[in-house]
Image (cartoon, rainbow, N blue to C red):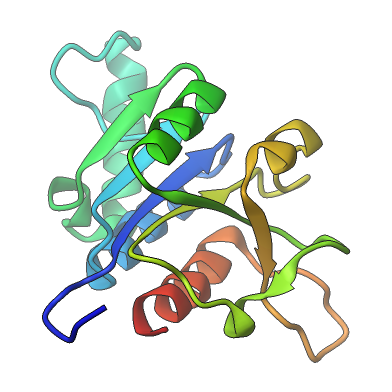
Length: 169
């Protein structure tokens, strides 16, 4: 890539539970110029025109998320998708390499990965991570090396590290 080109990065947030993690993800995504955040499964998200959710739920999730996102919820494009596998197929058809961020024996260290021009970063549930079916749908898995005794990071913290690595590689 020439110095004038910027890598296209999108994020697929599948089954995240916490509105605070989604707010943080949107804020971090804005900092690292993420093109779009796709929310799938039961991931909470801001209200949008035509939103089919209950109005009270829309208001509650948007308000709680906005406290952490600090305005980024109005800056970072997001889309909801019913079928995460169809979304990944569509992104792949659009030239994206689909990479899952997961602690997995088959995952490569993110600092050793050389991303292409288009990368779709898949994030999973805060408790169980990316389910095995979705891991299999990724082109490859990446993990953040850990040096302490804890084996995992909060999903929004891990996303920030991964987005930095993908943006600066």
